[in-house]
Image 1: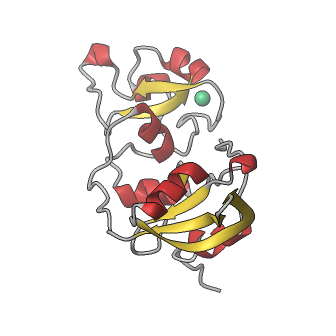
Image 2: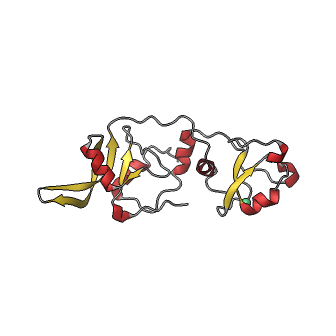
Image 3: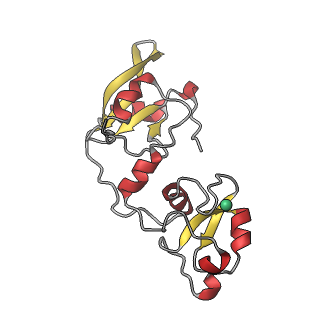
Length: 186
Ligand SMILES: [Zn+2]
C-alpha cells in the first residue's frame, strides 16, 4: 500500500504547531497553491523551500516544501470507525492469512449469530478467507484472527501509518518525519 504523490506538484509537507506531521497516513501534504495561500493568510510558517519559484513581473517566491501551522490543531481522540481505519489498524493485511490482496471485512462473530459491526468484531480479511469462513464461528471454521480486534487510538493509527510512506519524499521532509519514532534499544 503506497500513496502516490506527484513530485511535479511540489507538495508541501504540513506540520502541526508541535512540528509533527498533521497526519502520517495519508501524509499531510498540500499543493503548492494551497501552501502559498496559507502563507499569505499568515496561518503557517515556512520551514523549508524548493528550488522552484513562482514569479510575477514584480515578485518571486520559492515554493515552500515544509510548512508549520501557527495554531496547534488538537487531534481527534478516537478515530472514526471507517473502512479505511480498520484496514490501517490491521496494516492492510488479511487477519486470517496475511494476504494484502482483495481486502474486505469479516465479522469475527458472524452477523447471523448476533455479531456486531464494531471495532471489536470487525477485521480486515481477504475475499477468499471471508468466503471460506462464511457464517461460521471462529472455532468452527478454525480461523482465528492473528490480532484480537480492538478500538485503536489515534496514536495507534499514526504509528501504523508510518509503515506506509508515500512513493515520493522530498529531502527536506525527512527531518520532520521520523524523529519522534521510538528508538529500538541496541
Ligand atoms: Zn486471507
